[in-house]
Image (cartoon, rainbow, N blue to C red):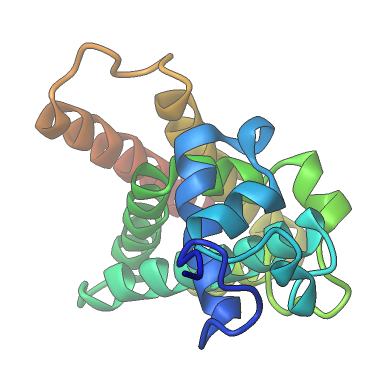
Length: 204
């Protein structure tokens, strides 16, 4: 009788199965507990089967990072599009989408912005952090339509640093460790509102 947990290459959509199992493993064990062999075990294929799609663990991690950035920018756009009004309000919406993705995918988010990600990033990966930068910079440019390019760049840097810094401190347990989920969301919105207000004031 064949072992159903060692089905080799003949798995159907093996690539997708490995991505799914890899993402779950990353969130459960973090980067230090991540191995291609364990991804294969969870996908119920032999340890050699992943080589058909991912030559190494880094190749699979690079795919997770690529998909992570695609989902992150989609989350930011979705929240910004819910808001009808001034660009400053949409800037807050981008931050809400950013933080929501990070809170739902903490290990992946931390990997995406780590030195490890810079090392493993696929040569063919498109977008990445550059998409986040461009998305936010476009809204900042609307807020500071009459400012110089240098002023807009400084404001965009400040906006990104504010939302990234806040959610990173949350994930590290340095902010809101004893707060309820509702209270923590309120604090996050307050931080984003303060960020947007500062950007608007710089235009004056």
